[in-house]
Length: 92
Image (tube, rainbow, N blue to C red; front, side, top):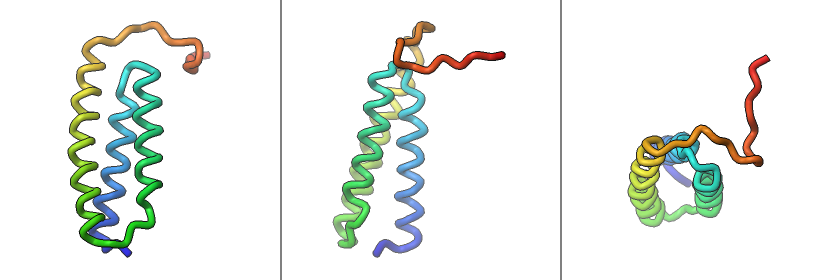
């Protein structure tokens, strides 16, 4: 079982993945990043070996940096058009 500090670190990484994944402007990239984040964390939820947990955390931190950079880049080249599959929020 993970220590409380490790658990906090993993939950923080998970929230960051979802936060920065939601910042991607392109629908397909955004949905892919969120889905892969959820699937990746669920796949390793029952990991108990401390060295493997630490290796997974380090890999997740490197991957998060990539998602952060991609989110910034996608914000530079945004389009105001929404795809048909995206929900359009109507202000009543």
